[in-house]
Length: 132
Image (cartoon, rainbow, N blue to C red; front, side, top):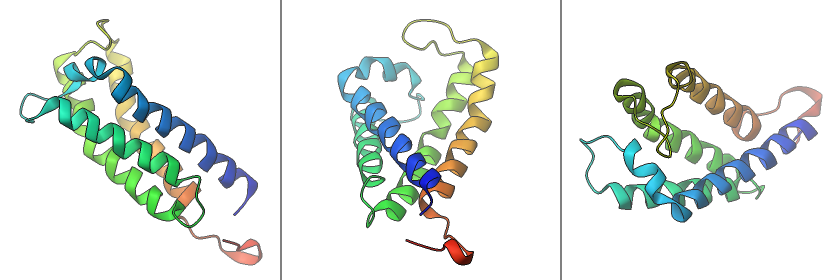
């Protein structure tokens, strides 16, 4: 694995672990983000936080890195409806309104984050630099 991919896994691991911890430390921040059609808002917030922590830590463990990458991609796809909910309903974040352009920007940025996870943790290296 190249140094840049390893660094990316480290950074992504920190990002998702910290984000997951935030779900437990401040769940009230995430409650307004939950679409009304979903039941059990608080348990789902804790579940998504745990999923982010598991995936984030998994990126630091070479034998789990690939599985953690797929796991985090599934998590991001699973929470994507909340991003749409925020945009459509102009949901404030931490009690403050979010500019509409940021809500729009989050949608493609989430797919860029998915691509980054795939590149860093899942994509197989080809050529003479092919190493695990």
